Length: 357
Image (cartoon, rainbow, N blue to C red; front, side, top):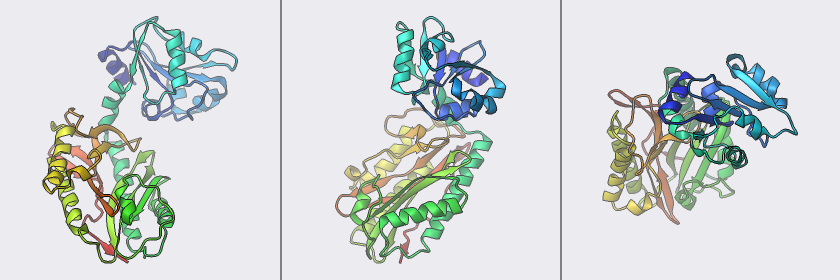
């Protein structure tokens, strides 16, 4: 919490307002549900933090780590929670509001401080959370190993004839079997559906000759996994192997470009240049990667807009893709961690083109 207070002051903020979110979990180890009733951790430079909770949440907060470490104050149904919040805030200044604060709560805070400036709390929290400590790296590694093992078990399964939605259920079961406490998502995109990066698994039966994009992840100890592999069921269609090789090269070159001091923009440019050189630039329709931790998508982003230098301890995906509309898609994704000498892959699943039954 001291780091958050120091960072809040360094950013020129009078207070940090942290609603239920990954930010609150990271700061206080408290994970209440986001509700219409206001819960807000107030972090102020030079003063002790205070957690404001609705009265019915007081027992839950008291039993959590946050309840044992800091002051908790309550507001009751029938009272204006934003008046209670205002009593914890300076009369004016700049306030950082957590990115996932409900609009109704932000508007309520603004009503009480109409002359204050409200800015995203990510100016503070993204920088604090983006560099993982050893315990966080261990949980991310465990999650990645479980995802690798789930993939290994899946490719030993006969996929031809199964519906995408059936494979998605199987993937979820394998994630739990390999140590995940929660399944977050399972993308199974066969044949032409692979050209949609966030395809929702449906009733299409997987056929011989179908490439299949598999993108899935969950949580281990609250920390996320996220992996993508593209396999082919039977003989690959025309042009698929060429595209696969380009994506694999782009992913490998981007991985080799990672080291402290290089920006997310520069890593993205390496992957993009490989794909553009091969003539598929317009078919690469998303950024190269995203940070990962308590959230599946968080800072740092490996994108053309990110000019922040990478630092040791940052973790993110590298996942270039090529999407051939009406035909197929290819995406290969690993989670990597920045180390002093470059990068370390947390995912070790086979990246060679696998032809399965």
